[in-house]
Length: 117
Image (cartoon, rainbow, N blue to C red; front, side, top):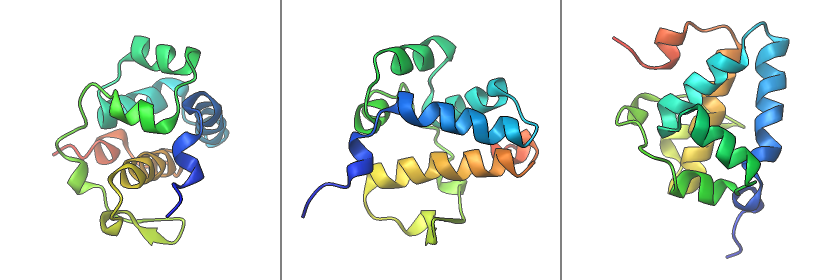
């Protein structure tokens, strides 16, 4: 079976779309970076490096400093599919990120998005 084409997409190509989406809804790039950092462990320098080197999503997640141990708390539907039921690990990671960005854009509190107590 052929690999899904999203795996080869550049993080640098997707990131500005995320920024536009959250800013259009009154949220900030800094909040977006915090959400992505919570998920992947990337800090500001790491995100900038991933953007500058135009790594693909496979590499972006493979080189993530530390996936958050609470990712199993991310539940819901993205593109008509429940994120907790996605079998391919990379696709699930991508959809987790999409879900968190969607929550940020919808105005959820950061404490809720970051699955804080």
